[in-house]
Amino acid sequence: MPPSPPRLALPVADGLVLVRLPGIAHLLLDASAHPFPDDWRDHARTLITRHGLDDEPAAGCIWCHGSLAAPAITPVVRVRDTGSIILESACGSGSLAYGLHRADMAEGEISLAVRQPSGATIRVSVSRRDGVTPEAWIGGTVRHVASGTAYLHGDPQT
Image (cartoon, rainbow, N blue to C red; front, top):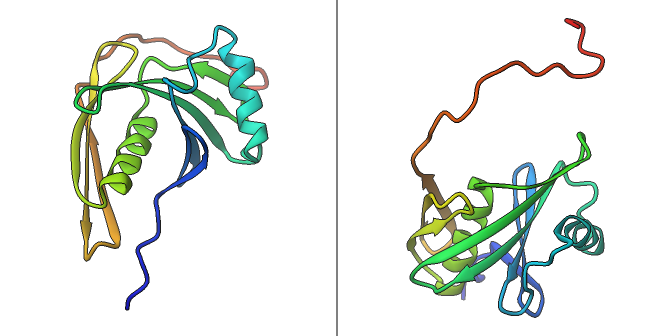
């Protein structure tokens, strides 16, 4: 009997799943078991530390809510090298992580539209070849919302 395919999403606690992607790890939180907190920044930092993600280049806490037919996320992402932790208006990698989790649960293909805090949706499709290798796509509308120049402390052009 061939080995079972590796799980893309690893359950770590009740209502809490870890999905690792290149460059970012996401903790998916079922919002019915883990409501989005008022102190989201401190709560996300605590979760990231508790689950050993401090050394990841980026780590997210993705609160998942809505029905299976109309899922939505509230993403908080921490970037290690900048020390930032941001409540995102949309998150492609968080939407992908949610889709990979759903594909693991269904043991097959999924296609869904994940509602973002901005009100937009990111479409996620996951398929598998031979039940092992996931293929995943995300897509959605892109809008230009701002322009400008950012100067960082220590930037040689300043």
